[in-house]
Length: 185
Image (cartoon, rainbow, N blue to C red; front, top):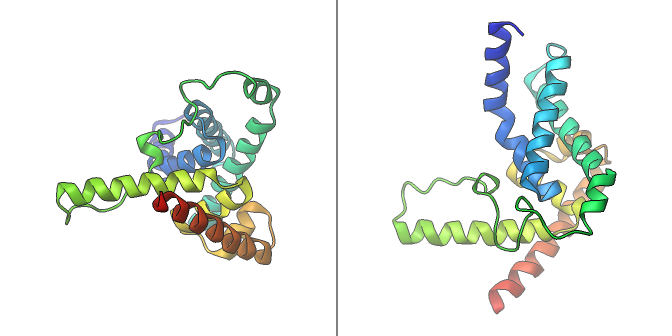
């Protein structure tokens, strides 16, 4: 790899790495697996670089390859075998997520108490999203965290737009119920 190619790759990693990690972590709920997926996606990116029509096409390609790589990890014999074992250090535990998986919010205008309260609420929301069935978790994550349109989500996931819309609606309903019960306790 030439110097300019390495710089270009580093720029893409800086631009998309967090987004791909968060998506991988949402799907796999394991830090090491999510990191492995991101590494594999950028390896695939290096092999196909230069064949994108636009930045939107590039982003959609990266998201689709990430989702496919996550699906491959979940279907692997190692993953199925490991699910019978005790959780590893990288596995998601209730209430414990890696800091990089929690979406950022601007807290510069807040005092420390407000920022701490909002961080706690973000963690509760993330926990509720992670508890959703995968089909709802995927579309909720892509819509709210990655800010993709229904049309873009349909393209990335290979689902019909009507399916994405109904899954967003159902996912929101499940989140509402989950969060309501969480705060009524």
